[in-house]
Amino acid sequence: MAEAAQAAGRKDVAHLALLASEAAGFTWEVEGWRTVGRLLLDIGAWSTARRVRERLRKVEGSDAFASKDGTAPAPLAHALVFAGHMVDDKGRTPPRFPETCVAAARREMWRSLADLRPTVGIAASASGGDILFHEICAELAIPTDMRLVLPPEQFVNLSVVKAGVEWERRFWALVERKRREHRFAQLGEGKELPGWLQDKPDYTIWTRANLWLLECALSLDPATLTVMALWDGKESDGPGGTAHLVHRAQALGANMLVLDTQRICPPAGAT
Image 1 (tube, rainbow, N blue to C red):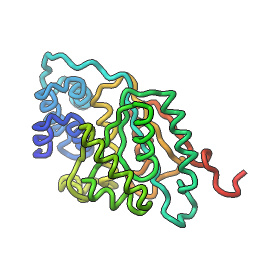
Image 2: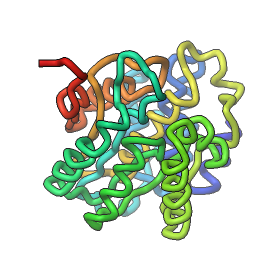
Image 3: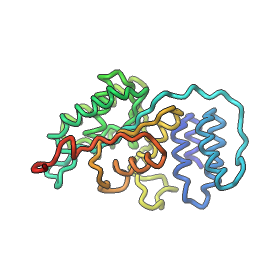
Image 4: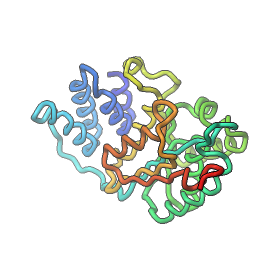
């Protein structure tokens, strides 16, 4: 698998772990897990390799690749993955996260993050919740990693510009700062999935982005994993929205903190 070899060459543990997750359901999933597991061992990612090996044990009943002795880095105390709604397009009916709700959501997020104080936060940078998350964490001296599924020049057009020039300005300020801090990474070069994933049912780059965010956190081997979701509790408009990430995080046993936009900013006329 060329993508796995390239990720190993960069020692990109989260990308390798993502590939292991994506292999599920294919006829060659066991061989894919075995390949990724060996590459993880080769680059010294012991804890992530163990997670892949556990998958193989369930289907093969024995160790599927040889373990190696090595000293894993000390586990991170607390990783927090954020996911949340983008600011609504003008005229969206019914509203989900209108611009008028941003200030109230910001206050709620600030209080929650000040209480949790994670060791590191991980998020994309769409208009609305993502950008608020990075900005609030900066105020609270919580380091954050920006993870974009696309190059920022493409991501901004899909997930920021419709919200207006002020959100776009804040997006580019964050990209510049995260690059300067070496806390920026992108997963792919375009909107098309890799060829081997294009026939995977109900799978998009946004689904892939959600899984990648979680793998970025898990690859840090955190003692505590929290997922904070600024969410209305409803299913997403399409594959890969906030609901998808929430459901996946729940399946992983992550600590969940849902900030309900319907409660924070009730729709007009609600009692």
